[in-house]
Image (cartoon, rainbow over all chains, first blue to last red; front, side, top):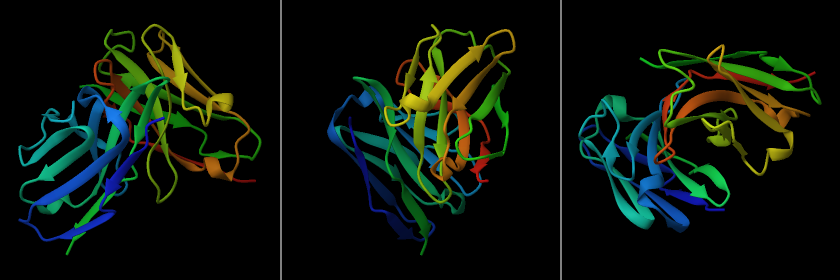
Length: 110
Length: 120
């Protein structure tokens, strides 16, 4: 079973700053099966990035994903007030078929 | 526009069975290219995948919950369901249903979630 680790646990930044969030897998993950989600308090998660680097429908281009193998990154180029939230990475593994989430990174206002 | 809506009992007694349904609107649950999943989130904690049901009817469950979980689909009602048996307080969580894109296995549409509390 692949375990995902996210760092940092909390990222304190100001609006307009750049946010860099890390997701590390315990073993290699196919880039096709790495996704990122945003969750705000009281809301369901929202898909941001799939296939490690493809933006979901309606996601602003300030969000970008990159990485391969065991190291993946979500970057928010310039934080908007609505971007302060918790971000989760997620991977799919085939043996057995299983979805795993990372523990999340909270981006809060400095 | 696809919408998913969870429903079911919000309060379940310990040792009983939790039952939830996810109604899908704006699209057919029988559409190829997708599977249908349940995820939960204990209060203040992260996301935990429970399992999913493929278009073919095959089911796959989180190994940590497999002995207690059943996911089924009712195509005539365009909905799918979750049953979790022998619940304890540790099963208290917000339960979400979601659509899973077949290629990439990412969750592209989520329900709003429903809180289930396990308490006597």
